[in-house]
Image 1 (cartoon, rainbow, N blue to C red):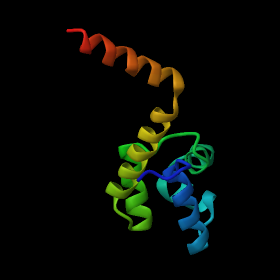
Image 2 (image 1 turned 90 degrees about the horizontal axis):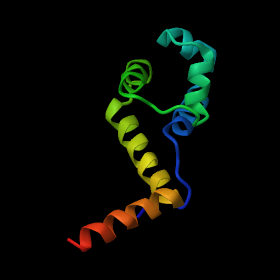
Image 3 (image 1 turned 90 degrees about the vertical axis):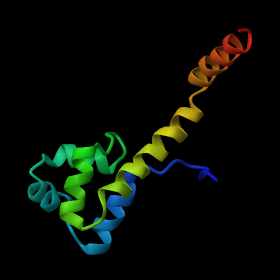
Length: 99
């Protein structure tokens, strides 16, 4: 069952940083990324890519697989909420049903 509100993995990473007392600027420096890029990820404005997931794994010791799965789940939930995309999918289903 999908959560009613999609959760971006950045929110979970932000919570992890807060619980460990790690500042965003410190983590950005350790990862070799700009603060603004890290902040965009943590605020759900940028996806967690494979490369970033591996960097979070190195920095936090939490498997990249978790971040990638969470990102994929988030993407799926967002696509399922996109009305115009749902209409497009329904059009594809109707076209295939006519074959």
